[in-house]
Image (cartoon, rainbow, N blue to C red; front, side, top):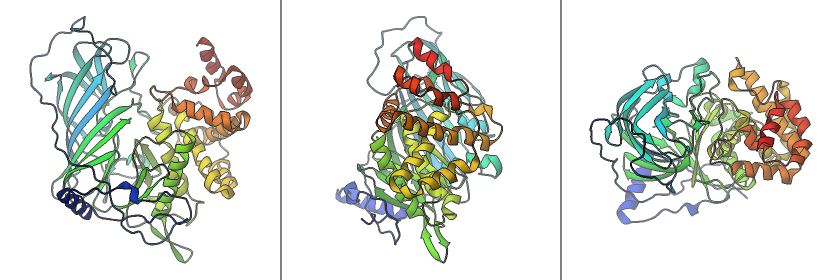
Length: 532
């Protein structure tokens, strides 16, 4: 069955359509798209209607100032755990695309679910790792001037009184963000936070509450590989207003959009680990509907039509095809995808990067597309899509347990080829895995490596081999049930013990030789399980 035609439109046309509907009270339904069955895609895209949510006005909670209070040893009143997500973010950001400047007001409602009283809350501020990229203007705590210390990426907020289990506190921050220019070399791989001549990316740009594990706030040391950020699930309410000389800019952002006016859009994204966006006046936008109804949108540039072997190939169409098909596959194999939209962005930096509800795929993979699924464009696209399960849904401290998301994402590539391109599975093993003769222990940390290639070989490639052997030992039914139950642990940061404890004692014994082959400390996992 031919694929649904995709859509290319400009932001100006988009807003004219939206505002016209607002005047006449019409609703543009998402059901206009077809469910995708993956087949080679070509042809000229045609316009498809965009979903519009009724507009609404909003303001942040008023802030007043008063002297701080000395810390109190007891709560003023007992608190009970609310039914809502423990961390809630509300952000109003003015985005000056021309000046590469963001001025933001942010409110964080934090509920203590740690099981112990807290005297401080620690935020991780990744932009402060870049010289001149972050400027904190003010910080209020429950309407009072807050006492804090910002050192490197760690923002420690001292509480005037102990915050007991179930109790809430409101933080209000005002700050400016100046994304750096995406340069070459190893720093180019951090282009998810930065700008190029045609794009500005905001990944890990906001102060966020650090994960709290074993009575400590997790602020991992910086490493060239990355992966140092560990975040809990949170609810996000983010509004972008385009200001300055150029407001004819397209916003790529996850969640449910609500158009406020021609330059302002609000996004609601529940139970996500971060909120990331990309901006460009040059984006072209296409969309398809995945099995299950999720709208998949691709934001790309005009260089994705490539000339190969005396003909043109549409790399953007292929990327959207495989993204849509893989999302449907993973939703059926692992767990339902929780959001109504999934966003893919062509990024002006190498490789790709995953975030909640949105992923980047590097421009080079589009411009070097050879015209078939035997390509890194296919591999990287479906890899990043799978991170919606192996990052957004079930998270972990990727600095110390990177295999828990990267090995699973790499093996998810194989599952995609196995399902849709079964004649290419041997090619995938040879091209993606065997050609590198990967060495190293799968349970290594990011701090065990001084180069990127050995890290990829050990964690991604040998990790995929290990998971394939695990599947062969357990059988498909048990293996995929293991993955589904692992995802069900999503409310906590997973550890290797979380994963292996889902097996029975007999299954652990059955797979002991696999752990002995791939892990440097296989017995540690069994010891933890026996203690439970």
